[in-house]
Amino acid sequence: MSRPTILRVPPLSPQLHDTVGERYDAVDPTDLPARAADVVGIVGSNAGQVGSDLIASLPNLGVIANHGVGYDNIDVPVALARGIAVSNTPEVLDDAVAETAIALLLAVRREVVVADRFVREGRWPAGPYPLTAQVAGSRVGIVGLGRIGQAVATRLEALGCTVSYHNRRQVDGVPYAYAASPVELAASVDSMVVVVPGGSATDALVDREVLDALGPDGVLVNIARGSVVDQPALVAALQDGRLGGAGLDVYADEPNVPAELVALDNVVLLPHVASGTHVTRAAMRELTLANLDAWLADGTLRTPVPEMGQ
Ligand code: NDP
Image 1 (cartoon, rainbow, N blue to C red):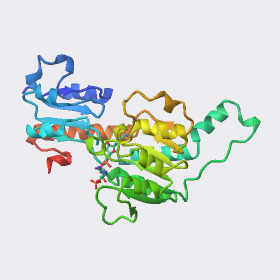
Image 2: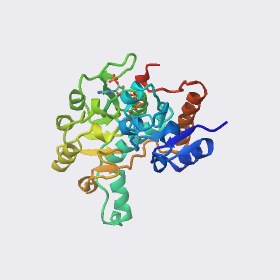
Image 3: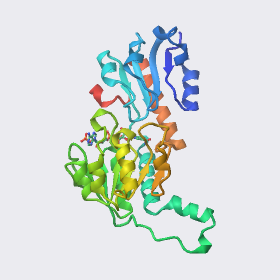
Image 4: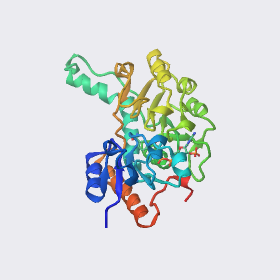
C-alpha cells in the first residue's frame, strides 16, 4: 500500500522533519505545485503559515496537524469550511511554558541577567550589586487563566505571590480574584503574565492603557504571542520609565527583535523557547504524529482544536 503524502510546512525541528520523512511520503513546499494533488495532510508549527492560499492549492487536503498548542498560524475557518480536520498539542507543554514564565519574572525582578554581566565584567570588586525587588509577597496578574495560565498560577502560589487573573469568562473553582478587564487587572498587581492565544481577538489586548496601569514599578511577562502586546507602546513605556520592566519570549515580527528592546537593561529577552525542552518537544512531536495517524486510520483526532466542536 502506498504511503500517504504529507506536506512539511517549514520551519519544523530537524527531528519532526526527519520523522515525517521516515513514516510518510513527505513533500516540501519546493515539491509544489507538482505534488499538490497528492497531499492529504500537513504537519506544521506556529512559525509557519498555513494560510487560505496554501489550503486552496491542496485539493485533497484532509488534516492539518499543528506542532504547538497555539494555532494562529493556521486559517482555521477556511480549513473547517472545507471539512479539513485541525489538531494542536495542548497540555503536554504546560509545565515547560509555565516554567519559562516564572524564569522570566524572576530574571527581571531579581536582575539575574544584569547581575551575571556585573560578575563577568569584573565589576564586583569595585562594590556590591544594588538591591533588587522580591517576587515573594508580590501580586501577580495572569491574563489568560487557561491550561498554561493555571500552571503559572500554582507556581506563583508556591513562590508566595498573590494571584489574580483576567479571562473573558470567570473560571469556576479557582482561589484567585477575577478582574473584568486587562486594565483593571494591571492596576491591581505588581506584575502581569500574558498567556492568551494569538489572533485577531487578542490583537494588542495589552495596549498603552494597560501598560500605564501596570506602572513604573510594574513588570510585564509575555509568553503568549507578540501580537497580544502593542510592541511600539511597550518599547515607549519602557524607554519613558512608565513601565518598570519586561520579560519577553515572543515578539511582533519574529525573529526580529527591536534594537530599542535589546538596548534596555530592564528587559529579559528569550528567542521564543517557552516549550523548548527535550522532554516537552518530544511529547509535542509524539502528539502531533498521533493526531495525524488517528486521522489517517479512522478520520478522528486525539486533540482537535476547540473550533472543531468535538
Ligand atoms: P487555553 O485555551 O487553555 O487558555 C487560554 C486562556 O486565554 C483561556 O483562559 C481563555 O479564557 C483566555 N482568553 C482567550 N481569549 C481571550 C481574550 N480575548 N481576552 C481575555 N482572555 C482570553 O490555552 P493554553 O493555556 O494551552 O495556551 C495559551 C496560549 O499560550 C497559546 O494559544 C499560545 O499562543 C501560547 N503559547 C506560547 C508558547 C511559547 O512558546 N511562547 C508555548 C505554548 C503556548 P476565556 O475563553 O474565558 O477568555
